[in-house]
Length: 449
Figure 1 (cartoon, rainbow, N blue to C red):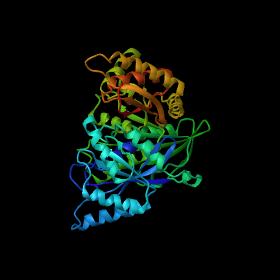
Figure 2 (cartoon, helix red, strand yellow):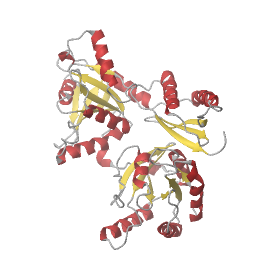
Figure 3 (cartoon, rainbow, N blue to C red):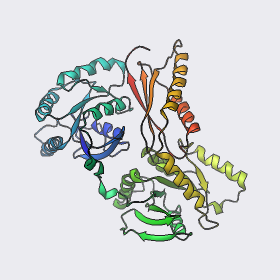
Figure 4 (cartoon, rainbow, N blue to C red):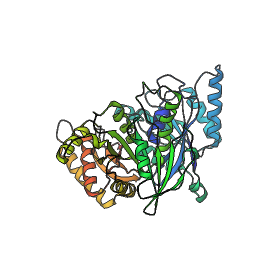
């Protein structure tokens, strides 16, 4: 798999851009210069191309500091090994001497480079960003790592300079420590301590299926259990119970959170277990957000159903109440279950298989074209109003698992999130993406409406 390195001065937004492109927070971000002292790696997939993205330390720290010397030396080594570079510049500041010097080195090394004109989040900076052409790497990609605007254009430009992918490179699998053995379906059990994850796993092991193997693990690892169900191999990941951050002070618990985040990109469906008889907690909400940020498909399991003395109508009212306390969970199915009484997981497993299959589907281009026309009609209605919105001119799916939809808009006017909500409803009404998040990327093209 190809390697792409992010380079630039401190505090130009490399780590924020890294987290944005990878789709999860792996790199530490801070307003303090020199926060990133080592390289951080993550996988990026865009338009059926995949590559390893590498974040580096800032290249402008005074050489008098021994750590700073090591950062610069390591960054330069990474650049030499990379297949392409994203040179991140701060549009609000412009070009400084250290950037001119490093641009000369990149030209000497003859590395393919695309410039990310970062922090370009208002029209007044667009003209200033064009000055970066002077560095000799062509037209810069104007973007904002903080809000995500323009990052799709940046990736499009990067794909153009990457070498053609060979069969050998396509088979390369990075980060093998967190790869999961081959299975038809991989499910992660996530939740607070004592919510019933281990009890659920034990119940699954004894319900009309044969335990094929138990992959060795230590007490510090995510536990992996391999089952066979209806001729399908299923891998369950039993994660450690995650407490509130203020309580998770031990090295083990901090490692468990990090390990779960490392495994999530390889998980097909996450089962989020929440106790049904008590109110939703802040930690339940945080765990849901973590799964959503990772792009996981999710099923919410409200456990300990046997402790609720409710009929079906009362149970539905309880579900509606609990859902109102969970952020952006409208697309996530919820199931009430009792692990100790009348436990029958067939429906749950069938739902998980369906979610996995639908997660990978491609949205027909003709349907997106129809959606685009509807968006354009709505945008034109605002053309004469005091607060016009940008005009949508292109709509396409650029990635699956989960679906990523790129919307290109014309002009400097904002594009309201309410329009994206309507678009999401239209897509979900036509295609089954139950349990799976739909990601939207806004690309902006300058010009008049």
